Image 1 (cartoon, rainbow, N blue to C red):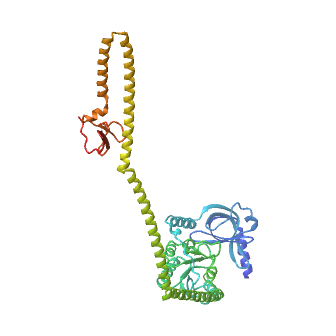
Image 2: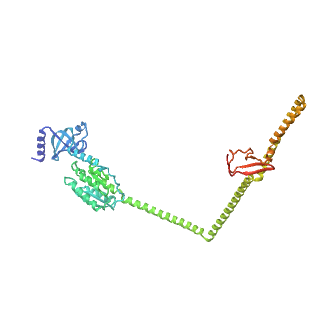
Length: 458
């Protein structure tokens, strides 16, 4: 039979088996009008197709790593002979085993702080870039094409490795370590082209992630296409959506941009040279002025000006000193006048005169009173016996005379006594006097001024 006949008969036979209920993990998805995906378990995989009419009735969005139950029929596509499971229903059964392991590893590394390392910027000037990928396929060719087109001055070093399969993680780690030891690349690109979920798993291997974290140079992770995510994306300094996008990033500083910057730098350098020349010219002019300022004539002018300034300063100081001395002298003269003995004697003389007046007034008053009493006595004598009254009057007069004589302070002074007054002119009180106080003693014929040097109390 023909190939067409064989495929048709086989397809009919498969469809006659009826519906199948299959549980597995979605490992690859492509969405156009219909949904194309791959269902797998630990040992096998099957391509599946869900038509748009069924897809639109789903209550969830199928994603890679999701564990689902699919109800459908077997079918063979006549043009290619490719076997497919036509999905008529789909129910979520949970996360797939591989996805669960991947999420667990991600959580573990996050708790360790592996993904929290400070991301280094990608250098603007890149002389040498290292590419860690497979030599097979179009990925390397596409990246080299982009680099050569945008900036042919960048040197490329390829560190080949496997990008899928169980042995891929070890080869990726080995390539990374080789690049680290060489240590002459400005940046490394680690990645591969698109593929199924399982194909990208080597770039989520724990050993690969930890090696990327310890890189001495910036690393760009470029694994698969835009929707694809690998743990290397979290560990790298930058994630690129595709390998060619990574090549665009490292060659973003193109030859045209470099030439433009060189032209700009040339203009800037010219401006700096002229600016430097202007600065040097200004320094030269200042130096010339400074040299002139230190010439003999300038120095003589400075010295002359300095001497004139000193002369004015000295004259002003002398005048101020003389003025101050005169004021001090006037102050001392006033103090001397206040303590002049002549002035003190005049003051004491005034005090004595005042005392004499008071004493004279007292004596006169007492004499007037006595005369009055005598007159009264005379009147009384006229009424009494004349003789007896005369005798009594004489006695009384004698008594009053003696009393007047005894009360006369001048008479007391003549007997060798003196009157001592304090500095206020009051009778001196030993309880109020102090050492160095001035006192005045009234004696017969004048007064004596003294200074107390010692006080003795009874």
